[in-house]
Image (tube, rainbow, N blue to C red):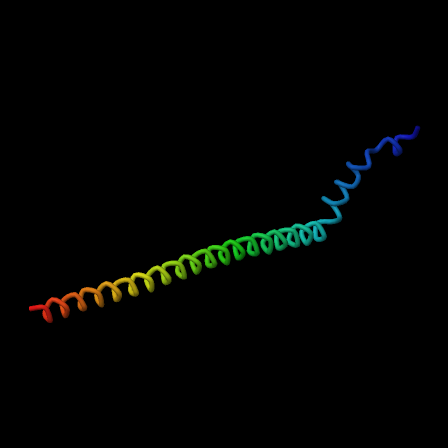
Length: 91
C-alpha cells in the first residue's frame, strides 16, 4: 500500500474545509444560525399567542361573572324595593 492511500478521508475533508472552504463554512454557519433564529422566534410567537388566548378566555369568564353579579344585584334590589313598598302599603 502506498503512503497516500493510508490517509483518512475524514481528516482530508476536515483539512479541505479549514484551508480551502472557509467562506462556504462561514456561509453554512450563518445559514444554520439564521434557521435557529427563525425556529426560536416562531416558538416564542406561538407561546405568546397561547398566553393571549388564555388571557382572553379568562377575561370572557370574568365578564360573564360580572354580568351575572349585576343581574343578581338588580334582582335583589327589586325584591327589597318591592318589600319596602309592601310595608308602606300595610301601614
